[in-house]
Length: 117
Image (tube, rainbow, N blue to C red; front, side):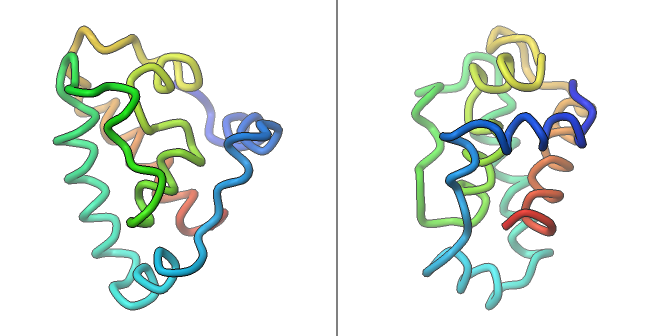
């Protein structure tokens, strides 16, 4: 797993990752619900969509819109197990994410939502 400062420098250099910003209904939803509720949703999404071994539809399980967490996942390359392996050096999909790995993903999403949105 990466140092977060180094990670965010690399993400900023990615043309694809750096294009994700919160606006429109996702930003409005974040502002209306508050960061703590959005982060609760994020923890649930991580546990159900990303953490299981061999997640269903891996690479396609995270929509590109309709929730601030989804935008944050694409911006931070925490959207699928392939991106976790490539960007975060978390071994591929054949194992369930450990609590430490889930906490790491959560911290990346939280930092992006608070700082980079």
